[in-house]
Length: 272
Image (cartoon, rainbow, N blue to C red; front, side, top):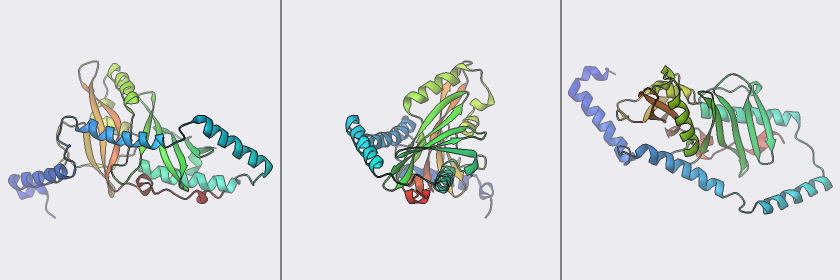
């Protein structure tokens, strides 16, 4: 297939326009001034709705937990075996790796369980520190991802779904990170490419699709293997007046891993 440049400037411009029209048809708000905020708000709003499905009265949950504990004392069951814990660790490490576009070795993480919650803690070098999962409908689903950006610990929220599944900073966390980055001396890590490098996801082999992504936007559409993600890197004014890009998060334009679409590994795979 010939390079686009060999087709001539007019034909190249026509291709870019067709791609832009396709994007506008799929995401009508793309070119609007508040498009970035709209995408982030929709995704995080869905995560908030999911959290509201938890018990409305804490005392009801407490009573239920006490009752279950009493039953467990009366009828003690077999504790989770070492093999079961190892299997669950491997399963969640594999699923977590699909979120971060890199392999996570089960030997480099520590698993902590508390009822229907499970946490993977990264014991190896890397930006991400913890990943939490919740047992739901017989499977484990990711709920949050913490990382360190410019020395500040931040937690991204995970929003599942067949449309726009993503991993994004809540507004309050984003504001705190913006203040932190704006006050620091400017460095190469504050550029838009630097912001991509600060995201927990591995984007080293990503290819920017500039012919689709409008110029001067806080988001970049990237080809990441067989998937496409939209990375959100909103700019704020730094101490020296230069724009500092904030690693706000990302969502999948296409090719999201199954666990992000709500398909999670069965709880039974833990070996419990």
